Image 1 (cartoon, one colour):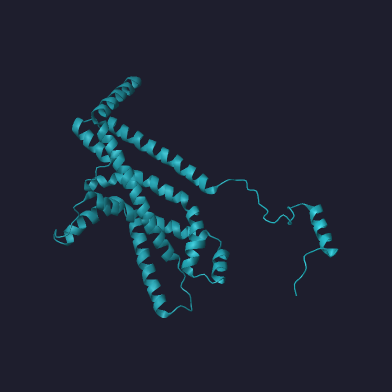
Image 2 (cartoon, helix red, strand yellow):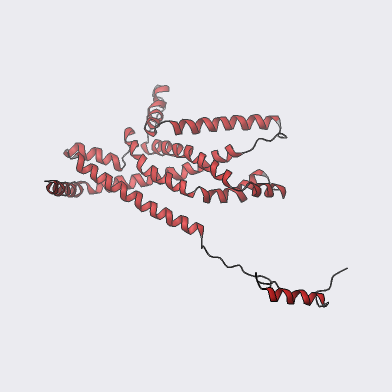
Length: 280
C-alpha cells in the first residue's frame, strides 16, 4: 500500500512538472535573484550599523559628538531590535500596505520587486549588524591600539585593520543569512511576489495536488540550500588559504630557524673584526 502511494506520488510529481516545469524554474530564478540581491544590500546595511555601534564614545570627545553618537546608536539599536523581533511576513505587510494606509493611497509601491528587496534587505541588515559588531569585537584589541598609536584615525583603523579581519570572522554568518533568505523569501507571496513558494500556491490551487506540489517545493529548497552551503564552505576554505606556510628569507646572511652552526659562524665572523664597518 505504501509503495503504491509512493509510485502515485512520483507520477503526480512528473505530471505537475511536465505541465508547470517552466513556472517552477522561473520561481526558483526569482527566489535566487531576490535572496542574493537582498543579502548583498543587507550586508552593506549591517556593516554600516555594526561599525556605528562599535564606535567608542571617549571622555575627551566634544559634547556635540557624544550627543550625536548616542542618538545614532539609539536609532541603530531601535532598528535592529524591531526588525529582529518581528516576523518578516508582518514587516512586508506593514511596509507594503502601511504606506498607502497612512497617506490615504497617495503614496504606494507600484513595483513588487522594489518592496520585496527592501523588506528582505532591511531584515537581513538587522541580523548582520549584530554579526558585524561581534566580528569587530572579536579582533584582538591590541591591533586597534597599535594602529591608533602610529597615528591612524578610528576610520582608518576600521577600514585597514579591523574590518578585513572581522569580515573573515563573520563569513559563516553571511553565508547562513543567505541560506536563510533563500527560504524566508517565501513569505513575500503575501504581497504578490512570484517566487518559488508562490508557484506552489498557484499550482496546488489550479489542479488540487497540494501534497505533490509541496514535495516539489521541499526537495527544491533542500537542493538549493545544500548546493549553496557547499559553495560557501568552499569559499571559506579558499579564504583561509593553505594550512602549511614556508617563510622566505629575504636576506641570505640571516640564519634559518634552528641553524645553530650557521649562527655561531656568523657571530665569530663579527668578533674577528670582519663585520661591516660602523659609520661614525
